[in-house]
Length: 144
Image: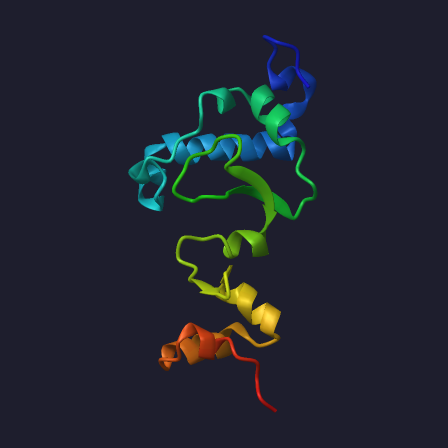
């Protein structure tokens, strides 16, 4: 961790994965070319506390593995403590705004999560839904 008032470059952190991820996060929210990527245009911002890399690293900690990157839990909110986590690509793909979620018996999961739970392919579940099955029928186990 850096001392108050010192930059991460002085401690070699500017070459760390966490520093690159922090820089990318800030750029997505401030650089005009990212506007078309639904950051600035949707009001997604980095909180005041995380304008400092030291605070970001203190709150998030080191990423668990090279397969993890930063993910907003609620994609309609900004980068702030409590709404950001380290997540794998699979976890992030299931958390996209475009992913459909289904609720059945009080449980809400994404279509890929339901397919995994049922032991069927995502394509099979999507076809069931596309053909007009209601959620309850679409989630029925495969009859063999």
